Length: 322
Image 1: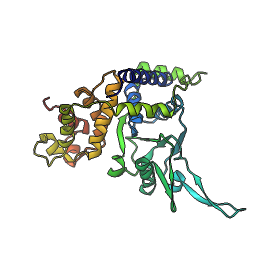
Image 2: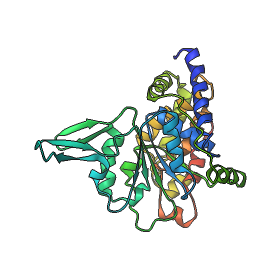
Image 3: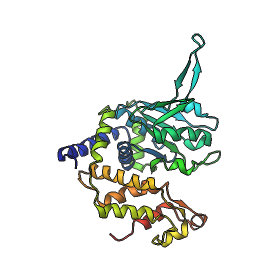
Image 4: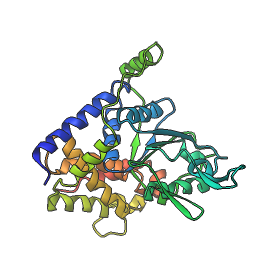
């Protein structure tokens, strides 16, 4: 188990990061909290929300606070894989072939409107997201450490888009819903962005702090009963399982992959530490379950016709008696 002093320092550092990011981002407290968790867990995040809700600004602010290099890629139907990863180029004078790195070579990559690119370009990110490397020709290049992909997509404007394949969705540790701001928050946003105000959030740490916090989180114990509860949530998301809820059997096409089980434990540990607790509780599992399963539970046509959403199914999965 990690040193108690380190664990207390973890909660303080986590809170400082949240507070600093909140200087430039109005509202979105839960989204900020979950992005920090995902970074410490070494995971990628899919952000879904309407245009203008501050997704890009949020990612840029996170990069500034953590002193990480930042790159933004606007995904379009004509974007090619080499536009993301880079390409081999020949020097006209020397005749030598060198690799020109693409925008994916940054600590934080914002993949804006990722579902507007073709599947061929989607696949260019798969190796980067999973292996943290880029292969060009016969050479494999390591990506910066730490490395995160934060991708955005618009849930309404689906014309001319290419839905992400299940294999790539599974590479995102969280799928977060970026909500439209409340009236008071909207007013604060307008005041902040229509005046002469400059960015207020400043550098707090660097990438080494993220790795240090990640190492601490790995020492957080998970009681057998809590781990068993988390695994039940994952297993019961499959309609073919005998113990699955009736709603799952009726409305789910297929449930979470094993990566969902890994993600729910990793992020629950960090959630517990962020609140100053030294072990994972049932509430930590519930806190992260929606974000872990939102893109890993796939509904059938009957769910769509009956107006049943994926969060309704997750509600059922979390109702199990403890």
